[in-house]
Image (tube, rainbow, N blue to C red; front, top):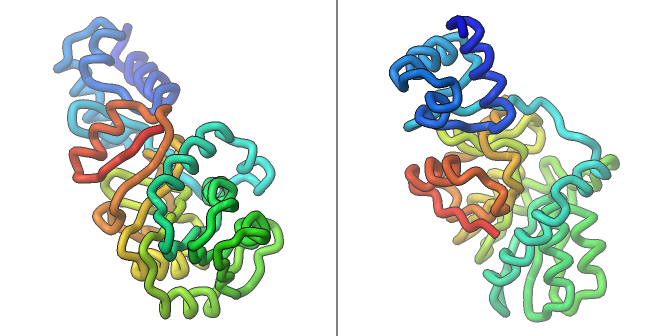
Length: 252
């Protein structure tokens, strides 16, 4: 195989897997690891791949997300498992924030029979799930985004800024090993940052597809979150690389 053909094939191979090691690529393409490393150096310079410790990954750029109905159906069982694990971390008497998102909606469902909690959210969907709960539910207020039922804006950020909670369960559309948590919508960033700043413990709840994604606006470093809960579908190599950065990851 010619060098140019191999590099094109390497890109396609990594795209289907999201991440690959040098050893894996060398074995697959039946070349020396030194040859693969040279290929990867060129591909990284061309911004087609991103090299990591011992391997390479695709950086998927996020500029928008599917509508709420499609997102609520995507990775449904994985999100349910994430939510079930998140619920085990919440103790009676806790005050928590549930960020807007389909995964946090599942957390709300797992908590709706619980009492002695205070739950703060900027998501009308979450509030609706909790409407008959014996726990106290506080809705932040703010400008309603009718397509997602998120509350956002100056009122939302101002409310969150004046709160102190035990735990914040936050979501993100993009998570990069170097750049941290990212978002495509600058107007949704301030509220998320206030959630992070108001909590003793910040727990990112996200399905495995968000790893390795980048977007326009960075809103938090990795060291600003206490841990991540995600599905067992997360590639073990990618999990290891995040853990080597000091990130605690729980897979379920």
